[in-house]
Image (cartoon, rainbow, N blue to C red; front, side, top):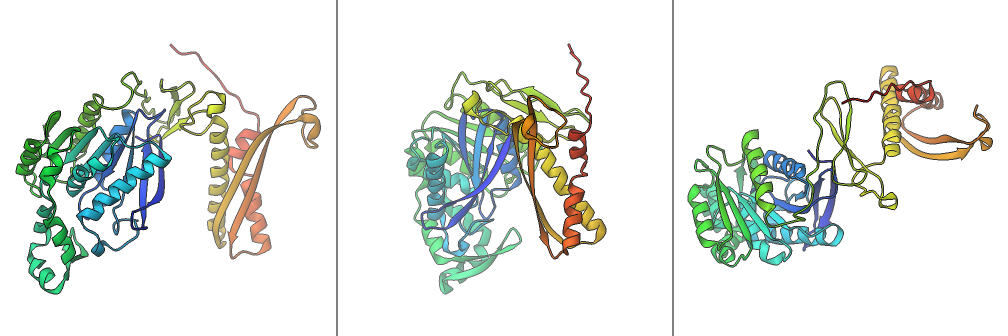
Length: 410
């Protein structure tokens, strides 16, 4: 599972804001991958989630995004085509190169796989290309709306149902996919290629994998996905792709001597914290319910900055507790609290500068908590909500006497 997940936008070549998600592993990534989703899907499709998680476990960061007009991205789907999808992929790689690291791995699912094969030549840093259930010809997608093709050609466009949702397909889309020569792109790839395909794929037939594989030059590999469906809707199939892919890419990308992070197992009703082995201070935190957090220190003290610092986590716990306590209190009282926000900072101050401290010498910890309360509230209601934040359980824990019983275990 990712140590961190960040959502943001970047611009396409036509100026549209495209929604993206970057999942990073615990510790410093050994490489970055770019993932392209299937036709009319989104970056958050199940297979993309599972594959990204599996690659994160192997130390690989994964960026996935919604093509123009899909998911949370701007733009009109009707104005897009295969060429624009390829351009979106190149824009994503350009953004990664500018603010992160250019992708060494490019992965495409279904039509996204075809787009990856066409885009790879425009991403010079890419070394390893993977397709999953990809068509060997972009025109293959016409079967999704073949009953509407005559209407599209005669009227210029038509509304079709794809995966139960209405989409407008224009004639320019048909013209664009007709003009593609993916076989040429594959034969000139000059990058390592792995082709994943199920022989029982009912959406994109296995013969497509054969055509891609035979067009490619070595190094190339083919992995049969047995009885998997096109969308890899079973956990075991998506996990299998992630495991094979991470092992295969290790021959072509990243630091061959890099250490794969060690992630502890979850223990019920217990928080487990352990070094990952990937950085001087990098630690993996697993809660009893299986939630994962990475902790680290900034580069200024020798860390890799792969996660919040211990004091960041302490302030986060306090702030979350205060916010949740205010929400529960307001709901119970029927107050119209729209949003609570807590901003916290921590510093060490001299005891003699503290008017209300029992400690007289040395330094004491000072936490500043600035609370914003928004809503249609009276002054009295706002004050009561503010005061209840002081009574949150974490606040009480860190201000009361605390006993920490430490034991050395074998």
